[in-house]
Length: 325
Image (cartoon, rainbow, N blue to C red; front, top):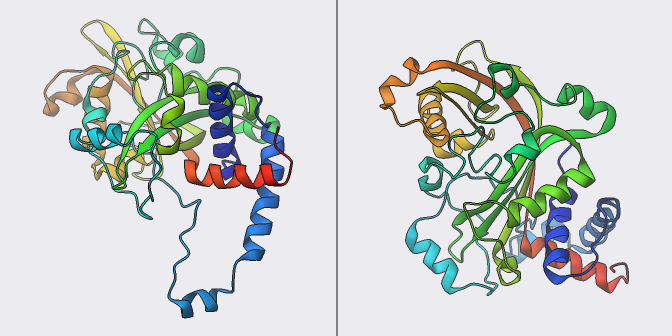
């Protein structure tokens, strides 16, 4: 299941690549994170003492919602103006606009071209036969077998890795997100997509070393894929949605991870329309039901997220223990 160690591993992979050094393995990070949590928790004062002192314990590993939107222009400028500068991060991240959600990506004519899915450069390798000319069956195939079965047996999952930047006001902007619906072994899958989403998402320039202090990472492991009886046969806040439809003689598709619709405050119908527009549909909102052969698959996801500050504090502890490379 998704864990903080998985998100830390993605940060370690990216940092090691940018710093041109060897990184720690997923197994090492899982073991070291357990040790770190044990030591830091035991070093904290009792809760009663913290309350009496009037201080607050802001959990470093508080969940960040994996938003598929992007910050407004002013906030983007703030982020650029403060590039490479570490500033205190608000305890509560603020929701962002949906401009990135609604703007078609470079892969709008192919399958799954949202911030919560594959980029143009990775769509062929990660989804195999799922291309813009794919048939109805290929878009909803899941590679080597049932994700739910493989996950319990071999610890393999379909997965997505998301990078966001967080500005000093707590607003986040999507910086890269790519994943796969084929089950992958966690160590190799997370490593591959941590780098692919950081460097190969064609909607963005590659992430640079100076950006590390402003980053936050989320990983989502996908499971329980189920064909929908109709386009509204799914639950807000519980299911992610993957769609496929025919428009002007071409096959289109896209996906949103489970928390997107709820975070944006959308109804099911609004989610479908936004998802179709993300895939490349340009029709009128009220005409979405008229689109040919609209097929939907719902799925669930388990997510874990960390900020750069969490990774940095943990990495410094690792180095002090003499356990880093």
